[in-house]
Length: 179
View 1 (cartoon, one colour):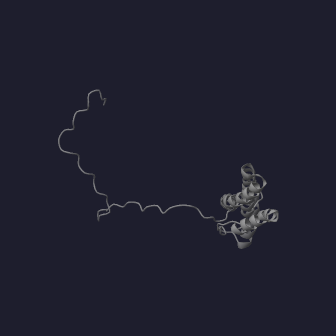
View 2 (cartoon, helix red, strand yellow):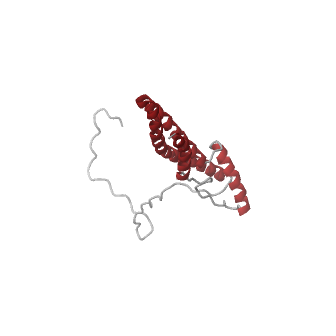
View 3 (cartoon, rainbow, N blue to C red):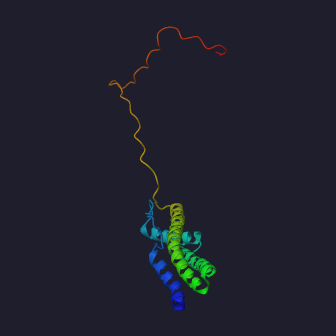
């Protein structure tokens, strides 16, 4: 049983590492800006990739995901061992550690995926900001604006006269109103 406990953290690392595959570069597309040649674009791309990496702390999204997953698995193992020891002594600690590792690994996979996604999102934002500042074309969010309303114009090309005011005298102003 102790050899199983020694191998279980390594198995968890392999499982978590295999579950999380996130690109180590931008997941958004930038294009050469107006008047920029491809060599300028490539130089700006390399510079902005480095800038984005520094902005997220130097870790890739994949690194962040694996680190978060491993932390959760280790925490689950420790909590499971403590709970198992409290309930059933040494044998309970081993069973608790195993169950904690399984539960922690499952939670770690979810936490790792979220952590990797968040890191990738921050990387992409920094990359796009840099590329935009260097004059490259980047995608923007937006919607199609509705077409402006058009009104029928008379055939003569002049706009129609406004309608005449209603017939009769206007009603008196309410009491206390000033003119």
